[in-house]
Length: 284
Image (tube, rainbow, N blue to C red; front, top):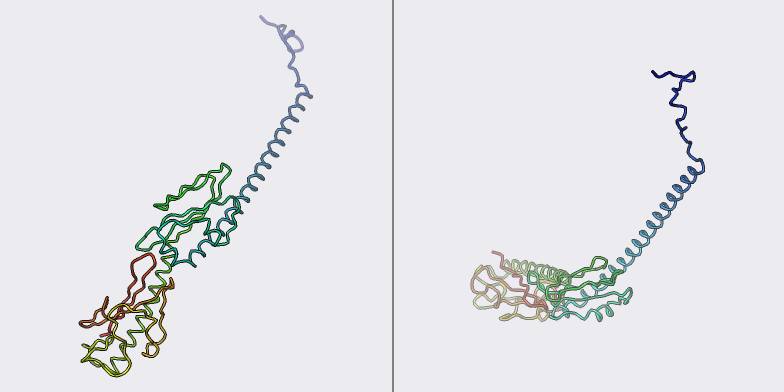
């Protein structure tokens, strides 16, 4: 039987070791080290965040410069639509940058494809780039216009095809307005001079040749600038397309001239080939 002593301990507890209290100095040292580690981590994170912000700012400034340079190249291309439209080979981009007043800063690189076509519209695809920290540069396949971009490289793309397409669309609208003006003139002429639907209002031919103002016989495409449209009563019409080339008109080639509804063909010849044609048609 085990007997408890007066102080509540059994005889076997007399020699049990007392629990040692933690050393206060050690605890303080641990707390100091932990605090120091946290402070160091905070400083490191702050420095890293600051560095990231600085890098992002620098990258943003470089990209903004690159975008401005691309805008200058687009403007240059738009000012040389006829020249670039006729050119089938790749552009000399160093010469383009110089003519576009782009300063060769930040080790800027530039390349061009050959003239490519989309939906009948021809133009060049171009790319400007700024190498990243690795020094890797962008590349363009001159035959397809496909651009390869390293991960840390900044680029700006320029589509000469899109710029040429804008010129094509503007020219189409221009000659469409011209066609409507000629159609209105044809209506007025029919009412005042030729009240016969079988007579071609666009060609002065017997037996339908009526007195008064009439278009000359345009058996082939003729420069619209050679015709006095104001004297005819049609008014001012465009004679040059968006590329600066001549707008041509014909009442035989490309036009319906043998049976009503008669028409007059109005066309533009883009510098990259093909043609844009709009018909002014006799209102019935």
